[in-house]
Length: 362
Ligand code: GLY
Image 1 (cartoon, rainbow, N blue to C red):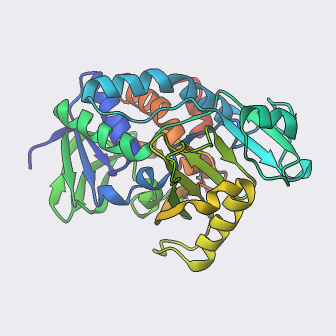
Image 2 (tube, rainbow, N blue to C red):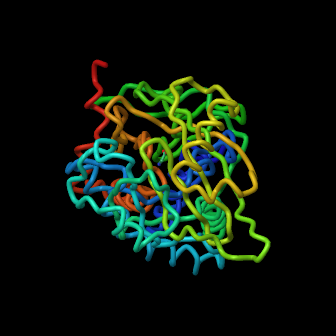
């Protein structure tokens, strides 16, 4: 098979985002995905929530804040490239609590009274005592984002190969270390000048890095009122065991469980029950919504819950995986810093905090 310039392993958000960023820097990319529809990017809720997630001051918070600040322009560019909306909505995220102790101290936000929260969002449960308001946190409709990215990569000439299962990354020793010689797959052998592993929760089956699946069950509701009144929820609600993400078309996404059950497909009665109970408890008007859909996905988790970004143990292989709960948020910055690294070997200041070698010996 003809040698490619850059082959990306993975059919999800990171593979597509990095692919597009590389194309914008003049590279030619091939993306090999086993099942593009299984990617966590489809399953997510699309919250852009570095503050609501309660990340402590750290390189991770810096990375997340940088990515959030890129989002409006990144989404607009994608929309102009494809003519497709991606549903970016800087609606703010409210983190209501039934008791102040329900939430960790947020390092960069002040506690708000219920009265204060109610000025921003009516209809919260009477049991809410107060909470936090993060006006700069936002959302994107990830189910629109994923096809838009795919369309953008294809429009720029990217080679998208679906149904390709990588059986092994073949390695040879070199004078100064080791390098990838080819990828063995169910669709033959693939060779490239450079390889990128962006296979999310499936990364560990290809490289000895500790990335494991953390299952999240989700569901969606549809707001239906006989008088066609619009959904009264106009911001994301981020509770201690639940989040509620209203979309501008009247859908409401509710998530998510967090389960260490490997790749165990399916929604459970208990999982769906807990999501519905907690969602209705927090925003009682949801009890009249229609249940639209249930689904699940697999977050790529690492032992320290931080992504693995940049160089790998092999000279011509870059990694971008382990984004855990913040993959949608981290897409723009991941595309930028990985593409810059691959094209110019110029490491971003933040890359060292996410180096794979922190897990050496695990
Ligand atoms: N980003 C929210 C979640 O992973 O459930």
